[in-house]
Length: 276
Image 1 (cartoon, one colour):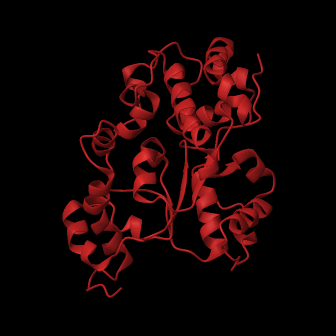
Image 2: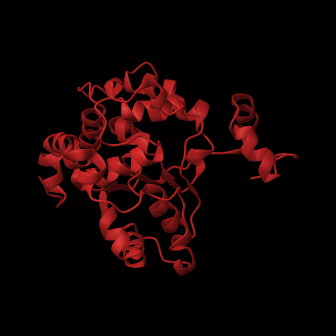
């Protein structure tokens, strides 16, 4: 890849990728990878840390965020107003040139992704929904025990607003906990409907044995381990999670109960069990 000046400067390069005109100038210098590894799952499930450590261990290029996929693009994809193939060509050609691609939103367009990349290896990362939803709410600074989120309490970014309100994904429920629990179920069902198409990683298993989990994942993907990841195991690839507290202390009994009622059937299939 021979980029013209000033695009070889990392600052200019990243800045250009954030702008449609910059992408248009850069895309002729990139080719779509024919068989990348995809890492899917719900947001805040440990997907970024696992993708980063896997890339470091295997010596592969990686991408953990599709900058060109705005919330409006995601909604057009979900409602079939835009084809994934066209969205990649116009807005994500750089990211899809990488060897490992982690993008949680692709989970919800899995049928299109599978059609485009039928032979690409796919990893599904799952996390206990109580910890997963608590982590999301902590990240956007919304308490877990509210009856409703006041308008002033919503996150500024539209994408994160839509992670709290998932009606655009066809998830029913006026309560924000119902909506987020429904999103977790919808993501889990992508794996459960086609488990043979994925390598499953539970975040809890990764957290308990990071090196062993990454090495096992390399082995399952037929990627030789190229580097020692020990110096990077505690690197905060994402902002730190919420302080340690019980689920009932964070959600309150009512909200925890409604979360578990919605998720319980699918939770059990991953080895997670209701507490109430």
